[in-house]
Every structure is written in C-alpha cells, then in structure tokens.
Image 1 (cartoon, helix red, strand yellow):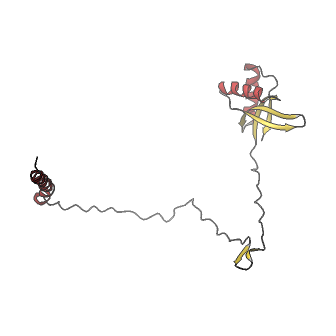
Image 2: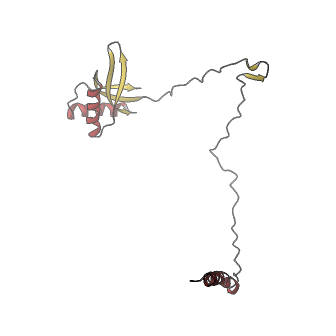
Image 3: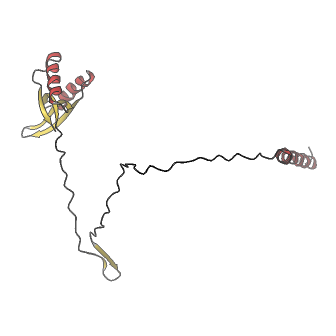
Length: 171
C-alpha cells in the first residue's frame, strides 16, 4: 500500500473517532435540575454523659542540656536519668491453677501438656529454676474461682489418673 493512502486512512480513522466522542456531547440532553435534599440534624443532648476523659497536661522534663560548638564539640551538661515508674500489682484479683505434674525433663512436661490440650484443657508448662536445675511444671487454668479449680482437680484425678494434682495460687 502506498504511503499517501495510509496517511489518508489514518486521518479518516482519527476524524471518525473524534466524531464518535464529541457528537453525543453536542447532541445530548442537558442534565435535569437536581433536587435539593435537606437533612435536619438535631443538636446534641445537653445532659450527655461522655465517658471520654481528657488526659492531664504533662510537664516536659529536661533530661540533659546538650551544647554543640566548633571548639568544644558536643558537650552534655547535667544528665539526669529519671527513675522508672513503679509497677503496682493488681490487688484483689487472685487466680488458681491445677498443677498436674513437675518434671526435670522438658520433653516429658510438653508431652503431658499436649495430651491435656487434646482433651480440651487449657494446659501450659511453666519453667522454674531451683538448686538442682530447671523444673518444668505442667499446669491447667487459670481459674478465678478456687471451687472451680478444686472441681477440675477432682475430675483430673478420676478421669486422667493424675493422683498428685494440687491446686495452687497463680501467679
């Protein structure tokens, strides 16, 4: 095909494409007026008891003063390290666990724990250090009610033949 014929075909395709795009815009209908919808939003109640409390303002503590100069370099004046906050134990909450075994080998403790988990108990292994080495205690729980822990102990002694199960306070 000759070059002038190719250029004419390309030009014709471009003109037809532009006509397809712009002619509907010129001929189309004007959009109709949209209806204005008003929404009445009531005021917030005056006696609303909000549970969101504002945080108290905190003072900025200056830990150290740092100066930088060409002659002296970096100089730290009066470094003070604040003491970490004291962690208070939660008072009034006690939990109870049933200790079903105490092992010197972690594999044995994990095996018993896995067996109890398969039976539906919330078993876990707790590691403790003693003079002879590490001890791995298998425990079930915790329960907030000591009576529930005692009942679980009796059930374990009867159904699982764990005669040495004891109830201890946790943690």
